[in-house]
Length: 296
Image 1 (spheres, rainbow, N blue to C red):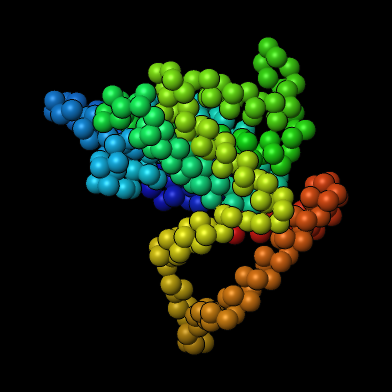
Image 2: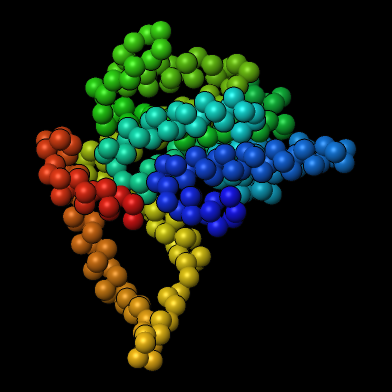
């Protein structure tokens, strides 16, 4: 498999799978770089710490990008395995109610909320005064918990079959996850537990706002769209057999905004129908349109 095959495989995937690919790719890349550094007797912690989120605010000022990069970093194989399995399960559930772009935005917002609560806790509570100068946060769990709690808020009666337990409603699973984190805020993984709680709060508020018809993910999706458009190629000029050159005409801002509003109105109407009557009330055409638009 060459680079073009990997790129095509990534582009064909859903946004959920792309989040998993990015996390796994970042994990493998960091581990390979760390392995090379170890061979040259270089301390890997001093290098990887630039991608992790420091609790010390002065250090954070020197590496502000870590507010984003930390949520794609993982300590070991088991850490990333359980986070990605959870992201896949809960991500598929919530995609029944929101679009793929909204899922990515929720992931990022959940990670940011987890980072914010982690920083507040370590810089406010005297209990962490000894650890604040050498503590770092890494992992996608804050973002994953945000997706889990949002899914449980939107679909509280959704059931999952767990090994050795049986069927458990998603809402109780989410409550259990949050409760474990609350009771663990003075434990060995205090920073991670605060990140879970921050993600949970964000996920709950996001879902409640969505149920009221408000979408707070739009600023994030706008940034994502702007960033991805930077790397889009301009249309190539095609030469027909007759010798004429043709090219896809670039839309004006007015045309683009009009089409965007029409797309949003169509998807909002379908989502309102789901909220009122359930997913099964959709026609085959509406389901296909929902699926097609969620990929855009």
